[in-house]
Image (cartoon, rainbow, N blue to C red; front, side, top):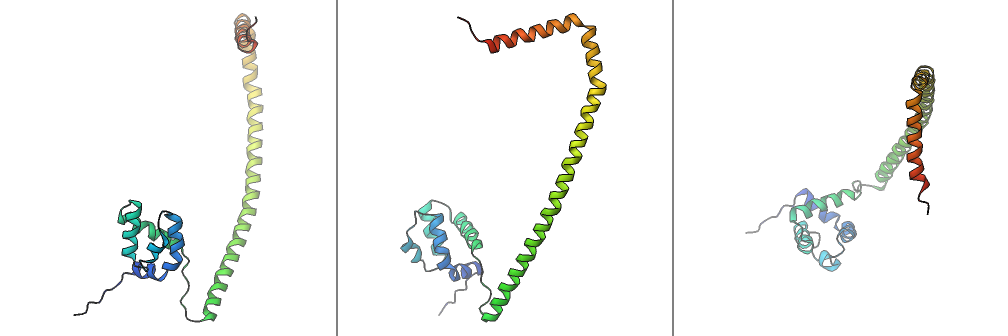
Length: 171
């Protein structure tokens, strides 16, 4: 009785892209031996068992890592004709160009809006400084003049402490 083994889509994809994945796998796990990896002949289960045995990682983690590496591989369009490949490439190229142009326009708009925002913040800051000078400074000056003795003692204390810190030792 002959048994027919069906491969899952992940196993088929791994087997189909195995030659492209070998350098990625070896770059990810440099302790692997290329000949031993090639001996798995693209069998996902054998490759997972080999890699997890050499790296002391679980097979589940190894399988997930291989899935991530497989996602890095650029999948080719169906091998129907050269014309359709060129059409796909031209479509992707034009989409990429339009995306770059949109991004460039967005940057130009963003640059001008950033300049406007900075100008607005600068004018608000200037207004706040003017308000501080107009309202707070006279009040602080009035308090300092009213408590002249206390203000002088505070200034002398601060000067003394700074002199000790910055003056260093004489000797």
